[in-house]
Length: 240
Ligand code: CO
Image (cartoon, rainbow, N blue to C red; front, top):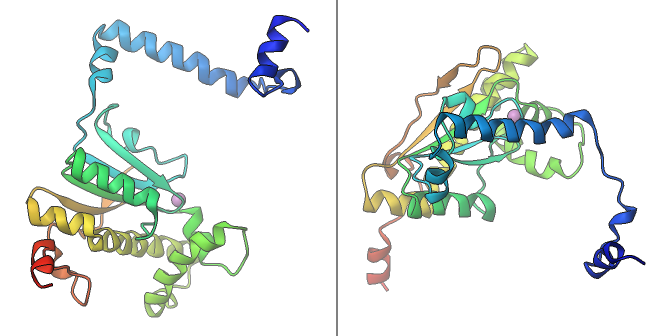
């Protein structure tokens, strides 16, 4: 056994057994990366030095995982300008520790000023939620969108065109997720501390590249109503 084999065994992995994919598409990623880094450095020798110093993004983007809606490209922003969280169909569930951790860090540490929930027309996740088919474990995630459908069934059931129905549910889903984000204690407590935090709902039209602002922006808890609006945490403590 030569020294390389020993090293591989020591790490607990016999890499001799791994057949690495060497597709042209995969290799292109590495070539693209070195070309990108070289181009950026040629344009601005201090670029990566500055980037490595830290980030001060003003925006948290919560979008769909769909490969056609990258946050930076869609908004014409650079690395460092947008903090990003993406999942299938841009769903914001109040028990999702991943989303809550991103939201808390963005709002309370990075102090972002805008949280944008960004859906997109033709969303496969939303379309799947409108069917009765099973797709696997994702069905449990998509059930949150089925709940949005149920809330708006009267309107959606009147739409006969399938594509139009999906796209309307895309809009209603974004609006519901804006509402869900506003309901979190993270956003409500931040609103008690500062007045420069807004939550917005957008839909990206992949066929034109353009964003539609749904006009559901919110900067206070006062339209949450029902049992969702929290008292300030200090008041709650004093009451006990
Ligand atoms: Co999607």
